[in-house]
Image (cartoon, rainbow, N blue to C red; front, side, top):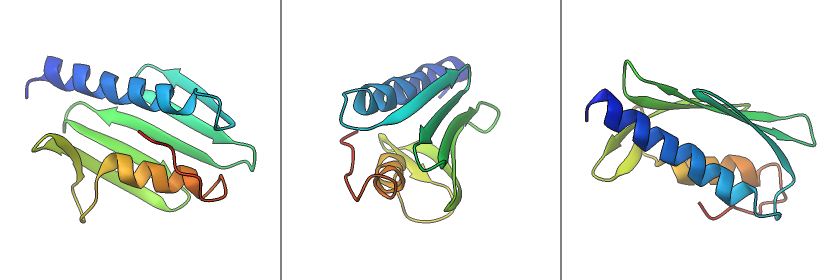
Amino acid sequence: MNESEFLNASDAVFDRIETALDDGEFDVDLNRNGNVLEIEFDDGAKIVVNRHAANQELWLAARAGGFHYRFKDGKWLSTRENGEFFDQLAGLVASHHGDRRPAF
């Protein structure tokens, strides 16, 4: 994947997150500033998604820790452990919404 393809793919991830969380079911504040998407919750928690173009990775930061993902076999997979980006993100969002998981 070249840099342009990576930027397009990561933009699509940001769009997918915004679409899923803006549907009215989730009370979150989304701030998208360039390479960063911040998801803020009423309980004061925040999840930050950003892209790291040099490594062609998506980074996810939350109270639970920091996670890195690379695009492989059509999915954003964890670089450190087994896991998929959207599944991890849904679990983190659910932890602030009574276990309601968004459908990304």
